[in-house]
Amino acid sequence: MSKDDTLADVLREQGVSRRGFLKFCAGLATMMALPSSMIPKIAEALENARRPSVIWLSFQECTGCTESLTRSHSPTIESLIFDTISLDYHHTLQAASGHAAEEAREHAMKEFWGKYLLIVDGSIPMGNPGYSTIAGISNLDMLKQAAEGAAAIVGVGTCATYGGLPHANPNPTGAVSVGDIIKDKPIINVPGCPPIPTVITGVLAHFLTFGTLPQLDEVGRPLSFFGDSIHDRCYRRPFYDRGQFAKTFDDEGARSGWCLYELGCKGPTTHNACATTKWNQGTSFPIQSGHPCIGCSEPNFWDAGSFYSALSAPPSDVSKVVGPAIAAGAVAGLAIGLANRMKKKAAAQKHEKLTVDELK
Image 1 (cartoon, rainbow, N blue to C red):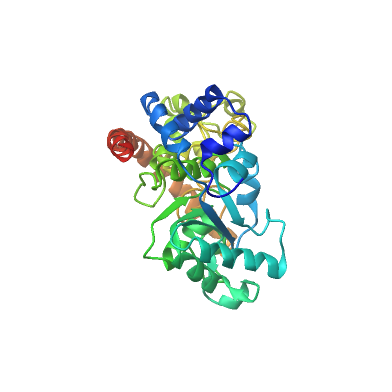
Image 2: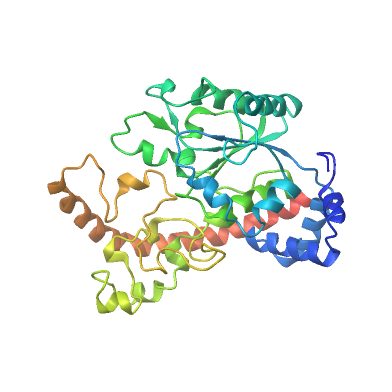
């Protein structure tokens, strides 16, 4: 199997039936929030698509984003890597190490200059660039080198997209996001701590299908996955509307599935697909498991607080900050929910028109 093979060639070699392929395309359409009328167009685009070269750089991170990727089930990590993309460099998943690993990155950059997709997880330390290095190269320099020849960049995880936990107050390493450094390339943000695995693979599948980035919101996230707030899709929303809130994690309200907003849930101000796509092959998501959303797919989520507080905040100040924030948020929550629904409806109509135009 070569990089010149189309996806149709690869699938035929593996004995995948036409019926199975169309079911795969239907799944992609669902993930990308596209109507069923787009399935034949997706199939045609995929059949003629060649596997793009992908370079994945990991900087100031915890490997949680890679762990999430390896748990993707639609498409699976195996089909994603071996069938639809050519993952030419990834610290954790590649077999090569040392000089051989860096030679693989340099070769992919040279051979596919201007065409490869660059994926980044982890923030970039600016306070001391030498704090985090790979093969003696600082994260900052490696990012700039790889970004120069990339067709597009995907920031995976909140550390890469908005600075994440390393960026939180007091930010001792001077951590910044990819977008804070790279200004001349298209960037798509897939935040989350970590992101939902099928959202990562869904974005890659969109790039493979259309050769373009999906429509993004004002902070660079794909609307197909981040167009709704978790609150708007949460099964506990009716309890919120009726004013029924759990007061502790083990009271009668919590056991009855009441809204967790008064326990610090950030669902009304957090945009993600957790409530619909869920985790572990669609099994559950934090709120369903009884834990409030902490807003991890939003910029500065850690400093925004919930029932957590910044490490730099004196313990005596926590109640003064969190209490008024929850009270004020209760008033703002309804307004935000209404605004999000209106914005989503308008964006969906625009997204469908743009996507149809792309495939003509």
